[in-house]
Amino acid sequence: MDGEEGRVGTRMNCSLACDDVEATWRQLSQRGVEFEGPPQKQPWGTFVIMKDSEGNRFVVGSD
Image (cartoon, rainbow, N blue to C red):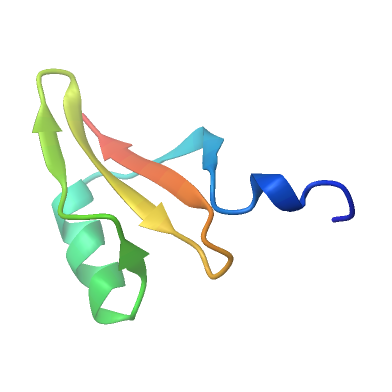
């Protein structure tokens, strides 16, 4: 979108929820989806950062 080029590749202000981050990460990785690294466990849940084809980053998390 014209005028929004600087936003490409930045973290989006949204997250996606799933039942099992580690299983989702394995399945999507096998399909060629790019991630910044493996899932990370935190006291509040598990998350991973996924990249789309334009380099935008999305958080995928579960409890």
